[in-house]
Figure (cartoon, rainbow, N blue to C red):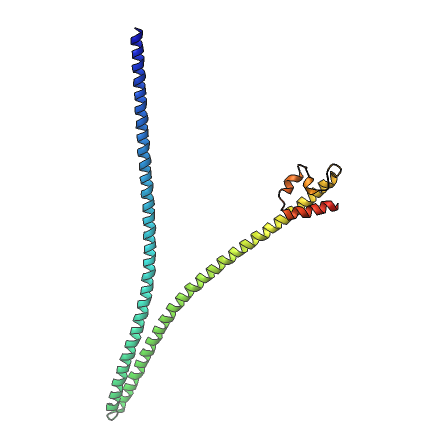
Length: 232
């Protein structure tokens, strides 16, 4: 009977151990799978963010390039238009001169008409040249304004940085000096009150109030303080 009981207990223990092992294995596998999935998701998210950033940068660069190309194309078209207008005006003037030479003999009225036509052509040419010049000047001014704005922004940022650094340095010097004077007054006063139980050497101080103050002083400040205390 005892053997049977022992066997049953052993079997039960073995079964429990096997179940525990299986559960542990399953938990480990599940945790591993979760970790892998989370890692993959994070990696995908990082890749997506990088792709979006790259796409944005590419789009911005493309827009800038397109704007530059448009400006160049407008300038080229303007110059070509001016050249064409000048050529046309030259041809018209030549034709008009030929017509004038031919018509002078015929009639004065025709000459007047030709003069009016010449004036009209010259006015058109002047207007075309002035328009082209205005376009070119506007483009140049736009680029100059952009450069000036960038320079002003950089200068303002540099001025702010310099002001902050100088203010921080001045504040540090003022705080350090103030700390030194307060420490000097405190230790000197305390030293004079306890001079019967202490020596005149600064580094002989054992006062619990003076030691924390001394720890905040530099070596040169300690020497100055020692000179002041010794003088008293």
